[in-house]
Amino acid sequence: MSGPARLSIFAAPLLLAALVSAGAEIALNERRSAYDDMSRDNKAMQDDDTSNPGMLAVLDGEALWAAKAGASGKSCADCHGGAKASMKGVAARHPSFDASAGRPVNLEQRINTSRVQHQQASPFAYESKEMLALSAYVAMQSRGEPIAPPDDPRLKPFLDRGRAQFNQRQGQLNLSCGQCHDDNWGKSLAGNTVPQGHPTGYPIYRLEWQGLGSLQRRLRNCMIGMRAESYAYGAPEYVDMELYLMWRARGMKVETPAVRP
Image (cartoon, rainbow, N blue to C red; front, top):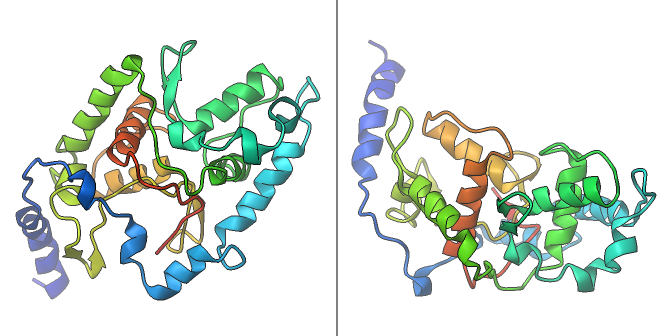
């Protein structure tokens, strides 16, 4: 048997042995952004808007904010005015409860609801250039603001579901999100530092992707890595997970558009 074949047989058990879940959430005073573990060069890329590649999408989002769309012939700015004031803190409070949907919606879903109901325009596709650009522009208005999930009792069952999903073992590797990001953060895995997994900078520019991506794209990547079946974009399971992750990161500062390796 070849060396690579032997490695493939032993890799999964070794990984499982390394990631034994203690089932404990990270203390609030121990939380840290993945930014803290980046190289000096990557930090400089995020910190300088003239070097941050995510800012190209933000500029596109600014144009979309001002562009008239749909049968109504209205722009986002026609209803909300300047985004710098009207959108400040909005991304830090999503997902939030939507009465018409009877459940929480994330920022992308809120944008599409506004497009359909108020602009009478077609919704943006998930992960489309337009959706990522406009959500990045809106989220950037909360940069530096503390993440503050709404104190809404209607969110509790969905928050509980998101927490349960985070701690549920799944996939062929029989791993949970919590085993990596709660129990083994700061350790090295395949030469990389295991982050705590806080959603502080989405939409985010990943050098691995060579582009911008949503939090749900990252969640799908993790599920594929666990060899688990992923959900469709916009699935309730993902939104519940987003809600829990934002609660888990409460008080941390929004970084959008963040840069990661």
